[in-house]
Image (cartoon, rainbow, N blue to C red):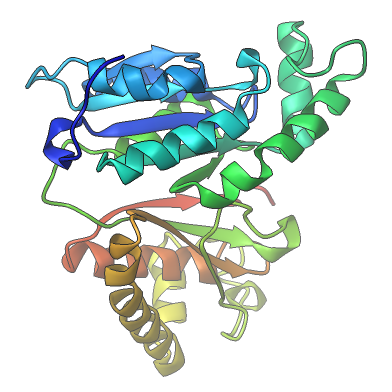
Length: 294
């Protein structure tokens, strides 16, 4: 048995990469490895404590990233116990959870011609449903959830790189996402905001085919006092909750701003909110989930 102490300085920074099979854990792990993390793939949770204790303390390494997935069998209760033990002993442990829609996961398994690790002699969808049930509590406790349904491998790498930058001075990191309510609310959002109270540029003939990334639409949206009040209020709200997030160990927040189609109002507001957050010292990326879908 490897001896450890209770001082957090004796532990490396740890990220556990988990989530749905087929959701992109391997891509996330490679991105972390490129960022300087020492990566262990498919580690049984009962070995997590010893692996963290034995991890190299090379100054060139950012920390330890461990991939845990359903290939290890019935592992998730053991993982919860291992995470609790490490945190009680002072380790800085965060959980990155990757997921995707059932339809997307089925397509990925069918295209790869590989079975789902939990489907046994049943359908792929049965394995996915079983895995969602097993992972339900772990997802609820995750520090960062990324929905990869509409992300390609390059998009996912950028999301991981933004969430784990090699800059210790930046603590709270944000993903500001625009979306269209008619396509559904993002499942990985921590905060959902509704921009449909603002006049819709769609009904202006000269703006209909433009997006919120273009100056005429941006000006139309944010020139209104209620839009500026909205941005002021959201910024103040984030200032209010950021200390609490950090105190509870949550370093990442996804703020989703929605309008009808995700093309005009939400895009303009997301870009403006991102600018405000960057000026206040928050590491921020912007994603426009539904831009271009119409």
